[in-house]
Image 1 (spheres, rainbow, N blue to C red):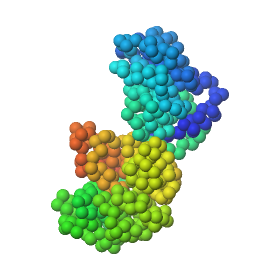
Image 2 (image 1 turned 135 degrees about the horizontal axis):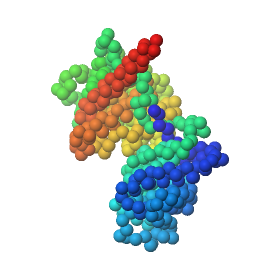
Image 3 (image 1 turned 120 degrees about the horizontal axis):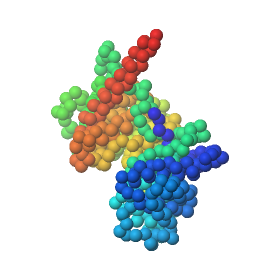
Image 4 (image 1 turned 90 degrees about the vertical axis):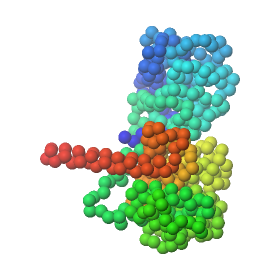
Length: 485
C-alpha cells in the first residue's frame, strides 16, 4: 500500500477543505491522541503530564487531557507559566508533548525550551502530537531544541520532517491517525514513502528460457590510482544483483588483470569498455578528476546508454559547464547519487543549505540536471524525472562506512541493465540497499563494523526474496482465477 507524504502547506489545504466537518478535526485529533496515550500509560501508572502549547497543537493536547481525565487518569497540564514549577522527582507514566506542531516557524526558547528539556529528562515514554516539538515539519531540522519522543502520533498523513535528517532520531515509533479523512480526495499526493509496492510490476521472475544476454551488460568505469576497490565494489554489486555481464574499466595504470574475489568480472581498459554493446553504465566510483576521467564522463553523457553518475563523476559535473549541459540534454535514463557535500557542489551552495531542506535540494537537482536523483543520507530523498518524490526509510547508521555508495551505484546499474526504468531502479535500488543493511544488522553484522561487501551479499538475497514473493502472489491470483472459472 502506497503511503503518502504531505508538506505543511498541503496539510493546511486539506485541513481547510475539512474545516466544516463534524466532529471538528481538533476533537478527532485529541481523541486519537488520548486513545494512544492511554495504551502507552496503562501498565505504568495513572499520572500523565500533558505539555500544552499556545496553538492548535496545544488545543489537541488539552482535548486529549480532558478525555484522559474522563478515563480516570490523573492529568497535569503544563504550559509556559508552569515551566519552572514542575516537580523534579515525579514519576510520570507518560509525558504528552503538545507544545508545537507543524506551524512552528522560529526556534524554541525560554520557558518552552525548559519544558522540552523536562520532557527529555524523563524515563517514561514521551508521546509527541503530530511531530516532536522543535522539529521542522518539512525539513527534519531542529529548531533550537526539540523534544525526543519515544512515540509520535501524526495527524492526517506523514510529513517530510518525520522521515529525514533528524526526524527519525526524534520521532520514535510513528503512528498515523488519518482522523477519518481521505487526504487524497482533498489533495492528491506527490510524495510517498519508498516501497517495492510502487513498482511491483518490475519484480518479474526469470523464465526458464533465459540466457545472460537477457540479463543485460553493465559497464563500470572508475578505479583510479588508490581507488580500484571502489570500482570493484560497484561491479561486484552489479554482478550479484543479476547483471549478465559486467565489464570494468579501471583507470589505474597498475590495475589488476582480474578480480580474485569475483572472477566473473571482465576487467578492461576504460576506453575499451565504452566500445562494448552495453545496456547500462556506472561511472564515478574511484574515477578521479583528471583529464582522462573528464573525457570518459563526456563520452558517457554523449551516449544513449542508461547511466548512473556517482562520486567523482558528480564532482566533475559540478566543475564543468559543458558536462552539465550534456547531462541535461540526455534522453536516456540518468541517475545521480550525491551525498550532501556532492549535492552542495552541484548546486553551488554549501552542505548546511542542502541539509537545511533536503527535499528542496533534491528537487532542484532534478530540475537542473534532468535526472533521477538520490540525495543520500538519513531518510534519502528520491526525485524521479516525472516530478514524483519519495523518502526512503530503510537503512541504519552502519551504512556510514566506506564503499556503501559504490555498492548502491552498482545495484542501480544492474537494475538499469536488466531493463528497469529509471524511476523503478531509483526507488527499488535505494530501498533494497537499506533493507539489505537492516537485515545485516538484524543478524548482528552491525551497525558497528558493517561493510559494503556484506550489504551487497545480502542485497542479492533480499532481491530474490522479493521476486519469489511476487511470483507466489501471481500464482495465487492465477489459481483463484482458474478456480472461479
